[in-house]
Length: 270
Image (cartoon, rainbow, N blue to C red; front, side, top):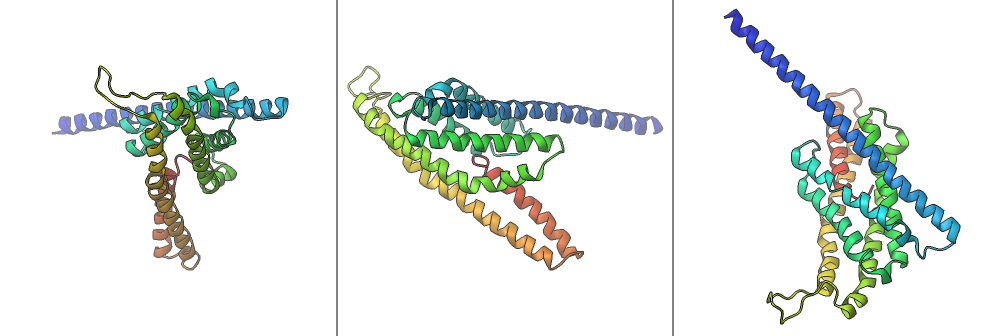
């Protein structure tokens, strides 16, 4: 009987050790990943700033940083893998849509259609993405290191309120600017008759993408975000009137959950 209890204890200790080792490795990898991505977007920010100071214009800026941008934005696909294997508690679908929409903008719009690379709208979403990603990845890095500066936390939960609509405007105007060039060139399009007996028009595909911003960007993201912000504010108001009570403890718990939800929803901007 005693031997059986000892075996159970040993097995439990081994399981606990495995879990701790796995957790340590996960934390180490996520810390490395977020530091690397923070550094990458800082490099992009410095390159854009240096280009503008040297040239005095935004024309040619996208082309000068295109390779670095494509690398770091595409590398963000790793985040979908993080969600899929469960080391990050975020929806695979939400993360996948957010990352793939960025990759689409980089590879199939801005980089493919050179005529729009000097548009102000392209520079707008570039600046928004850069500020967003530096804020987001630095927030995750400091949080994993258990040393989160107040300003970084504040920026994480407030910048997206301004950056989100600016990013959407920049992306939509860039796609809109690309439409005439896509229509004239017929790029990425297949017209009948052809040996595959398949028709595809990239021009209408871009229009559908633009229309998808209405339900995907506003309904799915903005509305729940502001509802959560409202709930968070409500919780804080209750706390000021019930300090030290059981209700205050309960409200603090709810408030933490709300902040966690906002973090997930505002993944893309802020």
